[in-house]
Amino acid sequence: MIYEHGLLVTMDAQRRVITDGALAVRDGRFVAVDKALALRERFPAEPRTHLRGKVVTPGLINTHVHLAQAMIRGCADDLELLDWLGKRVWVLQGNYTEQDGRASAELCILEMLKSGTTAFVESMLAERYGFDGIANVVLESGIRAALSKIVMDMGTYATKDDWMHPGMVEDRDTSLKNTLAMHEKWQGAGGGRLAVWFGPRTPGGVTPDLYREISRLARERNMGITVHLAEVQADRVYLRERYGQSPAAFAEDVGLVGPNVLLVHTVWMDADDIRILARTSTNVAHNPVSNAKLASGIAPIAEMVAAGVNVTLGTDGGPSNNTYDLVRDMRWASYLQKARMLDPKVTPAEAVLEMATIRGAQALGWDKEIGSLEVGKQADFVVFDLDKPHLTPSRDPVSTVVYAATGADVDTVVIAGKVIMQNRQVLTMDEERILHEAQERAEAVWKRAGVEHRPYWPVL
Ligand SMILES: [Zn+2]
Image (cartoon, rainbow, N blue to C red; front, side, top):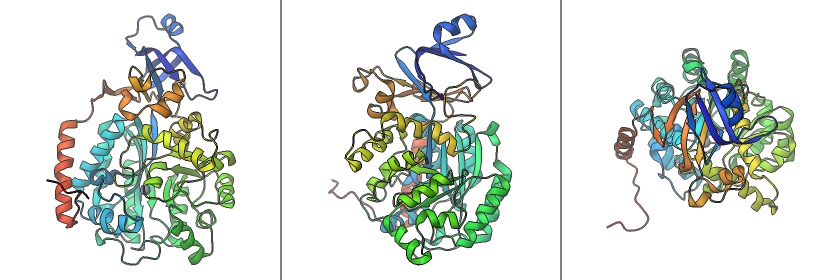
């Protein structure tokens, strides 16, 4: 199949942008990326799709997602993090069945596909969500994912004992053993679209000894690790008081650094922390909207990028964002840095699009396969329709996509050469059934959990 006459933002090594470009796809991979005219001559008889007036980018990569939180979207607005977790999020998630876990994953993946995300990292799947059911949703939907399974040995959050809902507590041996079992079973499934990682809880839920064991097993089996670190200031204080270390020094001490590690949030990091991340080639998942909404702070990503850290972009979850639309979050990644540093030149649109594509691919260990429109790579790309008032005029496609577009402007999604969404219709999922089921199951979870939640204003 040839996709022609589009404006291609390739994200290749030279960062070429090709006007009146074309992509040739065969057996799921790009076999040519060039001017439309050149491909006309090379492939005169192939079937063609026209992309006139449209911008094509690599599929977006969301490096921090909680699938189970899609169905509890909006459950804990305007609360402190500890109440947010201990009184709402964990209580609701602690009442999930495996069918709820599957339904929330469907809702979340449907939303991501409809906003241009073609690969993601799920950071913490609990035993009770049902790993197999969620892995099957990933495979059937056509998306790519690293699914990280929770590992933990303490039911606490930093200094708060008994703060975790009993439904969310798992023990060391079971959580470790089952992560390895899921890795055996699912790693590489779907033609390489699925990976299984370790998703240990934050310091406080995991002992240093268990982190070291996870680090050793991950190296031995070539697995990724993702962990929340220094999301709020209290996390930094906790590590200092408990272990006498800064967040990155602690992470290095327990083996949570390196190219196979993705640290999430890293808001409360100083210059020494940043040097450790750069020296160890550790990846970072920046979640600007979640950090802003929970008043956690603004991560120093401009400094991290300058130091050579691989910074990527995530949305986080339904109660902290409250959407999984990575396109909407791209502008936040840029604007918050400018506001923090009082400098409009920092974190330009180009740097943000790198975070959402090629840098995300690197964090997944898949940068040889995805993240740019290049010959030999998997054909993962998304098409933005610019024929709209808020995207007109467009003089620079990168500016338009990062600063003006939303996920709703994506009209076509292709993953591994397969058309997953066409004219905003997702071909691999039953949208009507998924929305209906999520609504019903969400009501049932609230009831079962016994959590009271009403809008703040009187509803007549
Ligand atoms: Zn998170």
